[in-house]
Image (cartoon, one colour):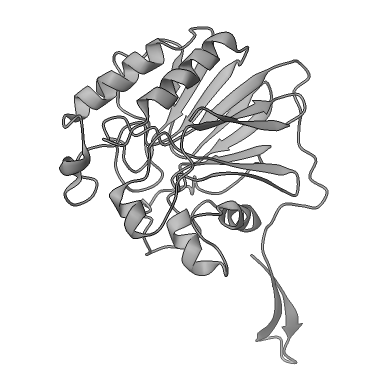
Length: 286
């Protein structure tokens, strides 16, 4: 945070007149890959939930088999988990956490082995709730194919030089109360807020638990070409000062909680990112 102001006559006091957020410089120019390549961005699969859209996923898997996509990025909530919220077991088709990951692993094995799959956890996954979250432990990913790379949440990954900041997006729950006009239906203002503050979870003591550490790994540095989040289950793509903001929706239908909150998800969608042009295309498999 920058501060502009004036000193008192004796030089002992500073009178703040203007505050500056770190923000993304107006001169920011995103990097583009010199070689052809594409990535598919998804999140919030929620295997084990009774609202997991298996048919939509099957169509997605068939499309991947015929596509030339080089990378698949999954930004958390691979499974629905166990005991994440009260009475969750009433909405599960798979009530064993190991079995949830085993089923998800079998789904990954059906995808093309030529693809590199990058996976980060979310708040429904079997890692600590506090952020940053460690990668999903090997005992839960033993049957995942060898082309999978397990990373932390958040994680900065490079795809042919194009930097993608993966973050599941739990802090969006906090941003909603901080940014006027923000809502779950439109994650763009919250993602823009992260970039303006150059921090993925800038508030402490609200709904997003944050683990203390020597370094703050939630800081956005360096500036990525893409900010990829999930969590809210609603697809959205926008651009802020040359940074592409993508919230990749979900593979879960409307839950009972979402019905109570009058939230309508946009499931069964994936974002195809061209690494040479940074252009995107939303694919609908519903």
